[in-house]
Image (cartoon, rainbow, N blue to C red; front, side):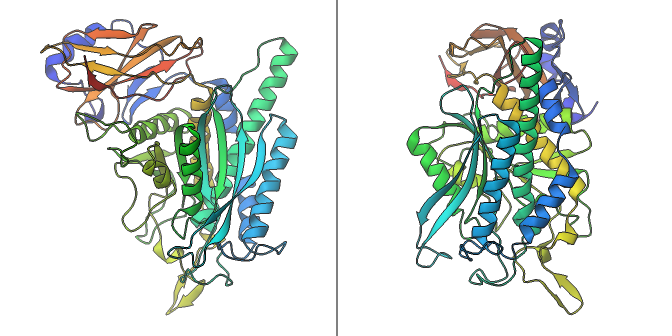
Length: 472
């Protein structure tokens, strides 16, 4: 048996067998952790709509603007950041025109700086397309940064193709919007034809192409701070940054692999404390959701969970959300090629530098896009997660009592408890406990096992997992 799916601890095997007398119909252990064995037809349809052709065409156009430096030309129709953001706005608008799902497209301007790498300050503009859900203020953000740079960040005029960093993430977000809106539109047409209720998003999805990342996360930070100030319930922020490279400078290929970074302990004082684990921040739970979505819907791609917020010497837009207390995660190539990041396009001593189109693997990029679509749409359709989840520490006991609040959500059909050994990276066991708000797990010690609780609706759509705090 793989160590990832071994029983929780020897002392609790009998108890777990007892808990699992009626198998959970939604989950099964695999070599890569717990995975769903049923698929949501709407999510599967959206995943199937992602195409290599769209990604190739969109990225070719985006790179064709020459440079997308945050402080580059904003007036030209065919060069610079201004032309790029207007083209992105028009692409999102065209998606809405075709799908007619009520997506709102806008250019959101922010005055930022002055600061390091932003001399004198500037007007920074994010391209944002919001697909509304029925729950007030619950939002999922999926982003890539549209800006690019050369060896010198002060070079605002030279060609900076930014094909992989981060043209790849930007066109991924555009394709995710196209796939999700198209699937929703066709599902609603079919439902109307057949006289059935049509599917509705619970949480809104915000597709964002942000600027100013290369100068210090300015665009995402402006968006995150506005969300915090407005009291928006951001379920999670997913950034895709450098997700289309053929391979790394170490000679390794990226096909079939992608890394997913997440913090294990919240980096912000605004986030709820995590007690008893250094591996269960909301960001880490969000990463596990996307990893499970990948195993279920995109088995050709392995989502490798990396248990740190980001790489050394680099930082992505998810950090801006982590800093104000939101869950945020980052997809990035498994193997990076540093000659193709932040480099002038050139050949020097026979060595090629520059972030250009010929180094993109569109097939792997498409699979990363499919994992994003599966995770984002699955969460947007799901009910809200349970709140005030607690593990009872009022008495010494060989059992574990878990409690959570009643969210008074009519679509919640039940709850599921997730479990794993303290040294396991992914959830390995589960128990469907039904529509209750507390459960006692007999013979399973809270000292030896880590827990989380998630909500699901009648269709099996599942919320994020919530790690319990100590309570009485």
